[in-house]
Length: 335
Image (cartoon, rainbow, N blue to C red; front, side, top):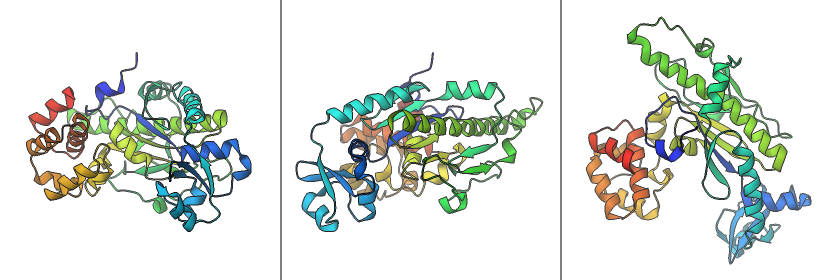
């Protein structure tokens, strides 16, 4: 039986494959699917006096999310506004999307339009069947061939995407993973490298599975999703937002540290405006700044703000940023 995602959130297990899905501009996409004639027009969904979301046509014309209706219309006079206060059709669409995704792994809903899935079991089945995979699908953060991780930009990845089907066609060859099992005769001194490469290959196989999942969702429901793939939920969620819309991104474990260090703390799930302000008062603006503050100070801060969720987020950041001590390991297991 697949293990629950929340039971392993804090564990440093590079052999897991977690996929995070975010339905692109969900409410707006739902309205356009119900009204195909709006496909190429700017569409915004309103609740009370705000445009809570809009499609990418509108965003390209300068309409932001959560903009006052008057401001949105000023920026885009042709904006089509649809009242979205009745959530019934969105809930119905969400249920169908989640049903499709749940066929592939253990699903944890994160709202109507987001979900995290542990797809490790299915990936391992494909791994065991000697599936012929030697490329990554989608964007890649990290380098499996070098000693130090390189963060590949979209330009470096040279994407070649089909606008008609929405299927990602990017493939990066990784010769170091072609012999995924390597040799079981490796000495003990190379065992860590063997495990790291095996973890990378599992993520590679996972990237193909995620491409299939996104294709299944679009084929069966009409909705397009962006996705992130990593060895834990936090990285998978962050990866999901890197290349939108209708794309997927994988972050390798060896690239996590370099990826997180320059990241604004506000980008971390669970860190809101109040937490961000307090951290800035402590001289913490990016994740790397946390290395100058003790784990105890940060945990005391989370307790002061009376939020176990924020504490979990903070400790997860510390864990992924190679900051270790007994307290962090303890908290990672009890939160």
